[in-house]
Length: 450
Image (cartoon, rainbow, N blue to C red):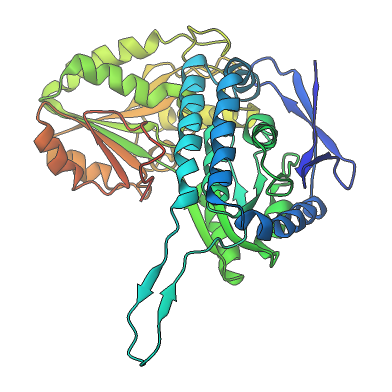
C-alpha cells in the first residue's frame, strides 16, 4: 500500500500550499513507498509561525509534565519497533542490525532527554554595586530549525529536535527527501501520541532538489533562533555562511574521512572483524564509518589477506533479509558517484582487493590499496561501502597519515596495549577516538564530534 505523507503543522496533517507531491522510493525495489507533500518556503513559514505561537506555552510547562512526554514517546517507539524496522528497510535500505542500533539509540535518547526538563539552573553573580543582586538564568531560546539527513534517519532527526524540545524550545524539522517518514512524519506521530502540544514540533517535507528553498526560509526567518544541521561539509559551509549573515548560531555535524589504525601488536582476528564492521555497517553509509585503514608493515600482509577474504564474503542484497550486510545504496546518483570514484582510482593505479564491480542497486563491499592522494576517493568522503587500505612503516607514520585529512570526525586505534592506544589517541586530530574499537560507536549522553 502506498502511504500519503503530509506536512505536520500545528498538530494537523496538511498538504503543501502548492498542492505538489513527490514519490518516496524504496531503494531496493524502486517501488513507490509513499506520496509525499512537496513543500516550499510557504509551507516553512506556516510551520515556523506555528512553532513560534506554541513557544511561550511550551516553555512554561512544568518540568514534570514535559518529562512525561519524552518517557511516553520512548514507550511508543518501543511498541512500534517491528514496524519501524520495516520502514527503515523500505525507505533507506537499512538492515536489521543497524535498525536495531537506531531504535535502541533513539529510545535511550528519549529517556535520557526526559531529565533535561530539570537541567537548566541559574546562578547568583557577584556584583560591586551596593544593594544589587545579579542573577543569571538559563531560558529556552525559541524556535529551533532542524535539518536532518537520510542515512541514520531515525537517530539523526530525533537527535536534532529532542534536546531542544526537552529544554522548552519548539522546532521545525526538515527531513531529507529520501527519508520523509523515518526521519520526519514518524517523529511527529510518536510525539503526538505522547501528548506533545500542537505546534511544538512541526515537520515540513520537500521534493528532491528543493531543500534549498526551505532551508533559506529557516535561516532567514526572524522567528527562528537556532539552526541544527547534519550533512555534507559542502552544504554545511553554505548554510553556515548564510546563517552568519543573519547572525544566527548554528550546530553543524559534517563529513567524516575516518581513519582506523591497526598496529603491529593488535589481535589480528579482532582487528579484521572490527575493520569489516566499521567500514561496512549500514552499507558504509554512516558519517562515522572507517574510510581509511592504516596497517603497520609488520602485520600488513596477514591483515590484508584476512581482511580482503572476509570482505569478499559479506552478503549483498535485500535489506529485509536479516543475513544481508550490504544493502542498496540510497539512490542511483549515489551508486554512480561510488562507481566513478572507484574507477578513477583504479585508472590512477589503485588495486582492488575485494569488490569493485557495481551490482545495481547495490555496490559490493570494496577494498582498495595503492590509491593515489590526488584521487577523489583519497581526500573526499565517499558515502558507501568502499574503504582504502594503506601500509605504514610505524605508528608515527600512521598518525601522520591519519591527520592529513581535512575531516576530523572520528577515529579508531587497535592495539594490544590500551595505554599506548590512549597515548596515540591524544595525537589524532579527531573529535572522537575509540581505543580498541572501530569508529562507529556513539551513545546519547556522550559529546559528538570535534
